[in-house]
Image 1 (cartoon, rainbow, N blue to C red):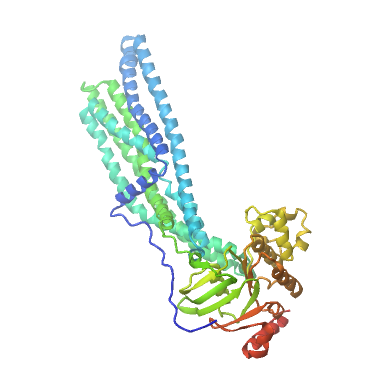
Image 2 (spheres, rainbow, N blue to C red):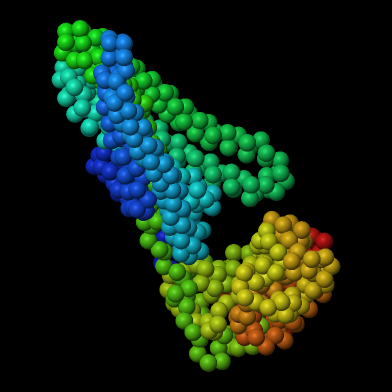
Length: 594
């Protein structure tokens, strides 16, 4: 083994930017809508087709109104009789158009909903796949709560504009054909009516520009709130232990306050916008009624034409709100879309495991001249070592000497700046100091859902000295362990985590102070069991107990990122004063803590 101190190079990962900004909001909206539609085009096209049918039938229904007024109702008032033939034609016309409208409604509503939910599902899966594909180094730089928000809240926001889009399509069809129809019926009155359309379009565009900032702020604050709540729940024991409940409450209150302010401003702006959206068509409708009455009186149009005119324009008042709703959803949807795309478009960070190669024969681990820098500080510097097959090696060092960093590098959890690592083929079993237990059964926590027989599970539990407490469970391997293994003690959780690594048959075990919560007797049993396991090629243990260290074949003594000595425990105790002083300090601390 050789150790030479030289500066190390940082390999900090720089997160990629979000989706490139468009030159205008309209371009952004177009890019958003086209991207969402391309996810499930058949569903969206069917919904739009149904909406188009509905729009055409809505315009055509004015023909039925005009026919019934001029051919049935007025003759009945003027002549005192009903034209049966005209009544039947009008009934067929009205009922037929109504049935077609019903078909359009079913297609529009059913497939619009399906398009929205399926699109949300697909985007969520894309985000999840991207998150899963990223290595642990990437996950260390992202808050869990923020990732959860991007999969859930942001995805829902991104697709919120999809639902009303087919409705808006129907409105556009209605506007085009009704505009033509209104001009055909009466040009002056038609021009007066269609003036409202560009007014509403301008109103919508101005509204979108003003509300965009509020929605973006609200969406970002929602992500921050998700981060903070998730972190607070994860650290609930720390919060309660230090009586920091009020401080956490205030922290979350500040975030929710900012979220409330952003949402309130958006709601006020939206309510003002919707009030104007109601007022403008209603005012125009009154004007049309007054002007239309004069047109009928002058003989320029019939009562039926005026009735169909007012009927059609009245039908358009509510659908016009759909366009406004789409415009109002675009900023909200765009905010969610950009946050999801930040995850999907971010390049996959190089996986440190890809740099780990197989060892030569008879070697379990070979580390050659590796250096690791973190936060501009050298953690490991040109460290080299090799461990033979079937060896148990203890890593000993003071706090901050690089013990855990070395194990994480060998496991491929963090990148190395230079050098190389070779590990025996077959995989690495890493057991962390803080053993993580899933809120599932004991069997799942050992197998992680893999096809591993109960015999192998029980054998792994036996090696980990866990069969005694597991045998007391009424449901055995099917016992639910609770969230983070709440029903287990610290030592029991460590042994379950150790059994997990053993059951997966990894030839190399890396134990990061894994037995720290065990009593010395149980700890020695576990170490001896590991030594006798034929499936385990080598075991590397970070340890501080002399009783554990003495069971190892060899000890690697780390100090300041270097291996300053390597030999059996007894030899180091006899020849290395610093090592002996460190072990005595460990033992003294242990006695004082008891």
